[in-house]
Image 1 (cartoon, helix red, strand yellow):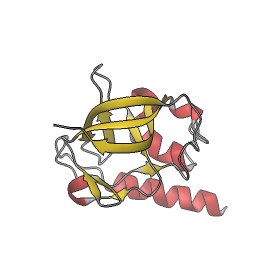
Image 2 (tube, rainbow, N blue to C red):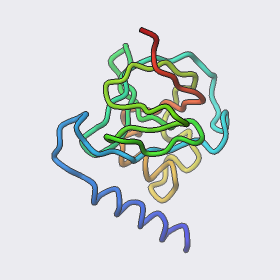
Image 3 (cartoon, rainbow, N blue to C red):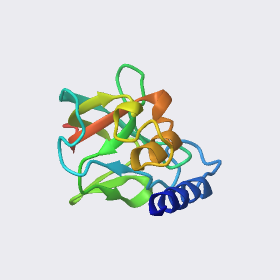
Length: 145
């Protein structure tokens, strides 16, 4: 019962934040994190791309291959200024080129990812992770240069 109430509150909060703002001009903050590094399974890869904020506030990673999966952030990441994310003292904003270590996944592979009443499922479905895919990041840094 408590989980259902939490899921409903989270979902209604997410829906209340919908706006007609263009991409990269939205107030974000809808980010999910791993509880611990490597918590979510998958082969770890070096990833690169550009952080994007969708009009609904979701943070995505625009990759060189043209795909733009939803980001599950490393542990400790919190909503940052201007719709971005903050991890420690580093802030990641829309348009920032980044490199990361993590895995590429489908939403259904995350715990509860195929349910709309779970942590990853609620945010993942809201952020279109079921169609766009997911990148689960263990670490992230601004790209050099």
